Image 1: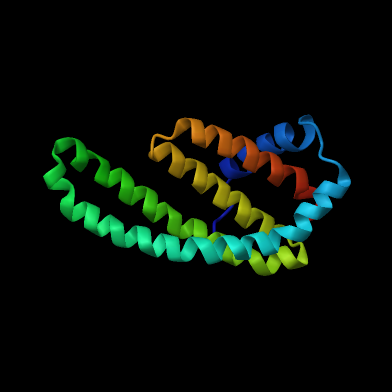
Image 2: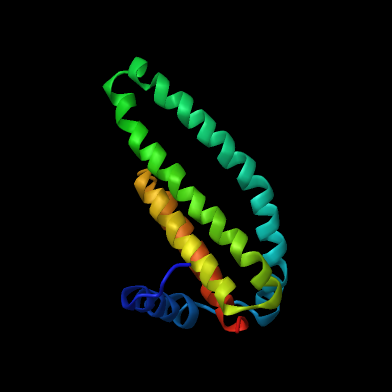
Length: 152
């Protein structure tokens, strides 16, 4: 389990201020719908993510072996690819851990999704997908912090 540190708490408070309080609020019905659908969407995501992650790890091994044939530029991509793939593992684990709590609307489940979103943003940045990281963070944090108050 991820330990809440003062810096993580401060980041969460800051994000809550901007995405939960200052941002335009979603209608209550939409928030309720998102919270009701969240566990099912998480299950669906895991059904898709786990085989995809295993496949990516397999292709990662092949890409690592073939990288020398692609020249120095290709070799330079391999460490970032592996770091990104390795970050996907805790992301999937956190989302799996969140599923039971999402059904019960537990705050710990919300926190698992929050930590998974932080990892997803970091992974996008590592892949140098800065635009994707920004768009993903804006959408992900907005939705997460809009429904935060519905978890106890």
